[in-house]
Length: 406
Image 1 (tube, rainbow, N blue to C red):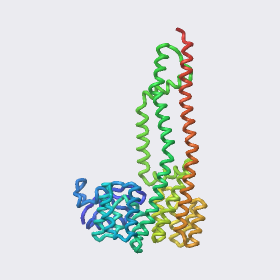
Image 2 (image 1 turned 180 degrees about the vertical axis):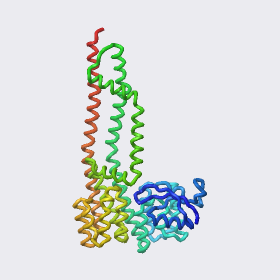
Image 3 (image 1 turned 90 degrees about the vertical axis):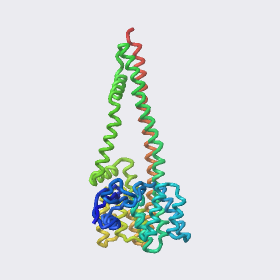
């Protein structure tokens, strides 16, 4: 038995590090997968950080490739396989065409694994850049002799996921930019403009009106304790990160997110859409219902929702079907439960789940537009009120200078 260090990713996406005893590297990888982990990097414990490349997995497997890169790789590989190009030759061609250095090395390791006798799914599982749904879909495709069809489904899944992410990011750019510019303008005025009036009043010995005094005091506090603002934000961020590192903490934070006004409903719909798309894709790829459900629950992106779904898994395991146990959890809106029930009754559950995810994607897009249509005027109004208060206070202060005896 040898002692190995390992770096892995658990089903929720968190990094896990530790040490295990195993006969060899392959035995260690099997043990990690049996524990529900997805290995990213392994090496002999004695080698530590300076281990040679032969004793470790690819350096780039520790880095996270972008979803767009993985989607492009999947699309190209599916197209080559559909055209009749063997897997090893397809990987070799993709390696030569790839511009990204880290993805090129990942493809090289995949090619080495396939040529060495490992299955493609097993080779993929050695890299944390490929999500669990990707590996399981490929594994089901290899078992059924339909790898290219499984990759096409996975490509559609990844492209849909990336499209939704891009739409959300694009929609949030303007409000965030507006808030940042407005906040920076207010801070600049309080730090550099307002203090000049404080010096003026001190020199003339006058008493400023109440709004001006409030403004001058705010400026004084901000000037003295400006460093507390970034420090406080940093401490708050570190505290949230540490709290969310525990299962209980992350569950509470995810539950709080679902209760937020405006965006809470959007987040729930987003999690339901992700769960439905994952489950539909896995079922159409031929995975058993229990394995597909367990994996889909873990990819919902919200531990509170995952906890709500957990009792449904027991119901499915007892032969109660899918729609009934899921509806009983109250984790899904009525529309989702109804569509799942119809899909189960007609024997087209996978297809119905994908339609459900598409419906929710459209609803999410509409809800985001509505939320932003409320958020943007609110940001403008708040900034206008703050700037207006500063301007009025300064004007009152200037007017009061006329009343100072010379």
